[in-house]
Image 1 (tube, rainbow, N blue to C red):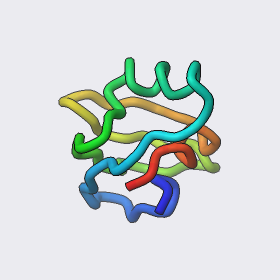
Image 2: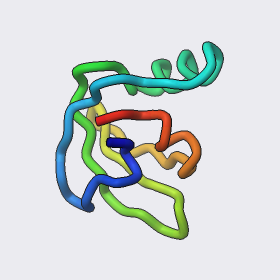
Image 3: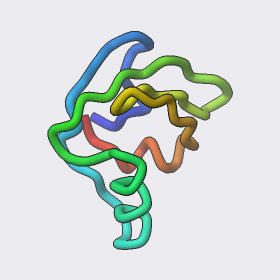
Image 4: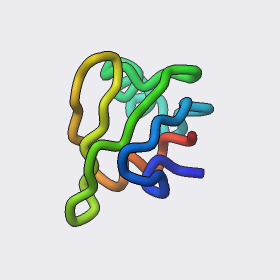
Length: 69
């Protein structure tokens, strides 16, 4: 399921990062790689704040839909 469907506070493991090559490389540079744990901190009007690798990152709903957990 995509990251947008995760519940707030749950920690999940990333299974796959989809999208075009440039989008996938951008997400991987932020730390979104397969096998890495990711926690949904909050969701506000479609935008997500996630915790990954001791950081908090805000991503759009479109980007979050490309991250499969």
